[in-house]
Image 1 (cartoon, helix red, strand yellow):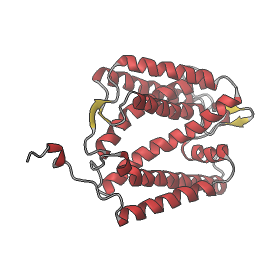
Image 2: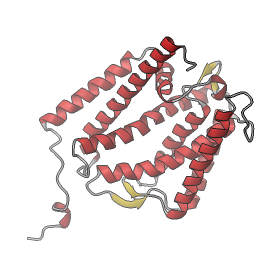
Image 3: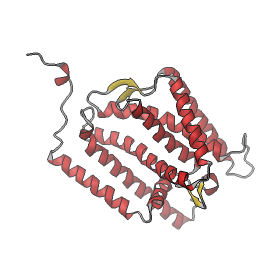
Image 4: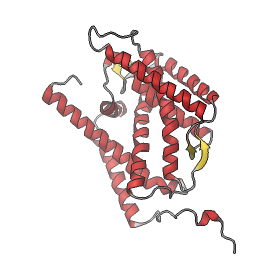
Length: 276
């Protein structure tokens, strides 16, 4: 009898119906539902809570839906919209399990994207202090544009790390193969910038929610990797159903972290009169 190498090369995942898995999944679901319901208000109010944990939310540096500020500033809105758009691109291109970093030329461009994001962020930060020298006047279009570039770069780097940690047999594909793929993503980013400049509430409302979901997406990916390592479940999943419990724990951890940061920020603001 011939045994295929794949049958012994990787350990089998713990049974999906094991008592521990069901217990952890149940606790995660309770935490997700409880934290979501406890956050007051409607969808935008809950999105504001996500933004409050990760973003300065300075009004003049944010896009508005009518007279209401979006959950994240222009730069953070770009970052997380870019992450969502980048992940959708990878999934459409059937790179859902891609586990290798982008090709070297692509990495060079991605690091350039990160450099532009950091450079514009520092220049914008300097303008918060009267009289501080800076190279040019910041603008929300520059903020969201460099944020989008950063989002494309980060998801292209984080997604392979997640897959390399999660799967028993990760796909040895690169997340991005060619610089021309970045050109396509930049084109998508240009459309998103135009949409954010439209002042059309029917367009801005879903983009606001997607940007908040993008924040949860990135936190969940990172924290799920930590959960996989802590529970010693790395490199065991053979199907997405094997990741339901760990992804749920990652999402629950993300929501818990956001709630704790929100509470700490609100307490500091009230107690110390800090301007955030």
